[in-house]
Length: 360
Image (cartoon, rainbow, N blue to C red; front, side, top):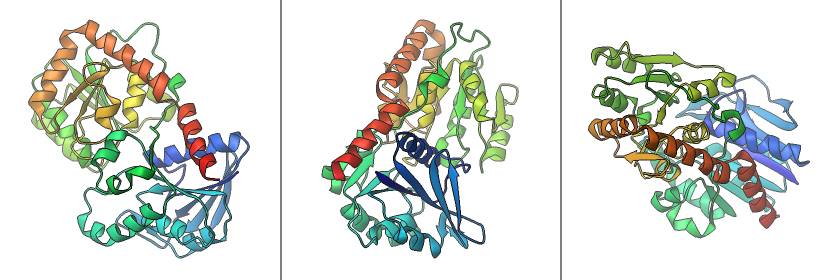
């Protein structure tokens, strides 16, 4: 099968969608399919590379507006390709239009990773296009049933939606035989952006004086949140570790007692880091923002789900998991089992291929 993935970037650019596409594309190529990824790059000419069996076509972009590349060559490159199935990773207006305009009736699959949440002005222009593209799509993949239920874009096309959750390489995160026994430590991993809600976590930590917090990742709010930690008297307990090599990430999970993703908006559509934490045997605390985070974490089973932007509720959940170590361990074990049965990369790839096969 000839498979074409379309998005704005590809590895070594790092991000949740980029990683999802890379995992799928490489697994498909390893299974013997001819796989290409059409993306953009800031160079002067279109470049073609092969990475782990995937043909990566990088069209020249001459600007980026509202996180979207502007490229004339990108849709032209896509128009010349002849895939058996095209897989668009959304939201990405340029890629969606390019796939929509393909002359041949090529089966089109869209993974709807997230609604557009914050850029409302831009959304007014994008909305009519997105509705047309979703109507044209042969199958729409959502990463959780919760997102289909709550998305104003997916609800009208729910009949063509299929739930395929994200997956992780659970073997990388297998918990050590001797769990971490050091000082009580919570972990956050992710880009330091507004919707991650780290400010809420910092305020909650004031009422949990025996717990430290490790923060892995960088982003536009790093300096602001460092200043907040200092002003709250948390500088000695909150450690901003920045970006760390991917091979060192499992060790960060294994050096924690629990994981927190205190998101405050639907821009946090799923939370792959929750899967990494669960695969590492950690109980997770997430928030109810109407997305997949409160579906991945089963409240009372694999962790706790609390209201967003509520430091008191978050502190209460932290206190519960601190004071009841047996519950903490049981939740961690349940999370690991849930990943092994529902959220592996192998399962994700198999489910996506079944979608393709039903259309080709």
